[in-house]
Image (cartoon, rainbow, N blue to C red; front, side, top):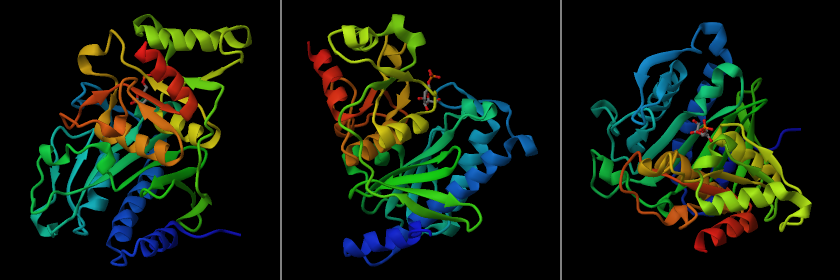
Length: 334
Ligand code: P6P
């Protein structure tokens, strides 16, 4: 027995907010369609020869996979035509994408996305995902420039991700909690399977790339070594560790069973500001995590409060179970 579809859920949400134009629901439906198409593209990769890398690099200097560009184009194509969006920005494009004149309406929203986060995992068949964030387009701006996207994470009207794993799931928030949907491929619809997702406040599981240990600052060194000391140490309990190298998979695990995800600043990344991107990775994931009762910080400040200074700005990220985030943030204060 299936529960309700994502479209029915979104319409019911809009009615609760008294926003009965249905425009936002239609906008989200286009994003849902893009995620279904990306799920197929990722699933078929090896069968149609798209698992390779290109000679090109993204603005971060990372080699682009064929699927990075294919999925970026899917997102642009699925979301440019309806007229709800004034402009788009993506990890895979240096500059914002201006909606072609033939589709231009008075779009009220800006769409930011990482079309295939964790794409280095795609040819080893580890889960990857799409992350998206929706902001309001400034009044009267018909050709948004990068500066129009530079709004704090608290300005997001919606944040979500699709996870292409053992099943394809879509998790999103519009500011009234977090809900998860699972794709039924036979029907071609996402069904509500994880209503009102909540992150446990405590956890015994942390996620960090341990190979960077020698570069970490003191607070992270202290936190991780105390976790590794286990029951005999000051924390008085044993910890487990995970590292998938795919943020969407890590955050989804944390939404289901708790945990602490860390990609902190370190001496190797200091001049770049961090590893993860604020606008289309850290901000949407922080909105989701906070809406599910978790917390998200750079170690020094709440990520959602940051005033962005660049479209592809990178930040340190510590997010997940609230009480563990607070422990590590307290170490940054000492
Ligand atoms: P590392 C993927 O490239 C990503 O942006 C996140 O999804 C992931 O958490 C992180 O980078 C992995 O980084 O240094 O472990 O490869």
